Length: 150
Image (cartoon, helix red, strand yellow):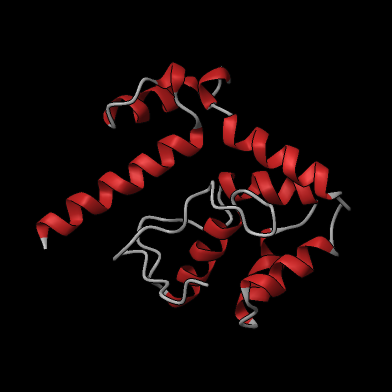
């Protein structure tokens, strides 16, 4: 488990890093813990990305925040998640996570312009890039630049 939550020094885990089978969860927990430590930098907990997971499970960000305040571990939070909200089978979780990892805001008319701009600034082709790929590349470039400046 990650114990350094200073997201001004390094990126959170990738949204593709599955925790308990769930995409997004590890990243969300990193951002939540950093928020509580006041070291989240430009990252935001309970953001639209986190809410993709929260909506899938039928839970609220504040419920996860309470677990983080109580210093629950990643595995304790996975156990809690599996026993709260909308029940999901292992197969449903796996399929959902795969779908999340393949999704692209480029295919959403309301998000296409934003996503295209973000991708192009990172040197990515928006029509061939997933949201997870864009976030990973943004993290990589942000911290590559930061480490060169220091």
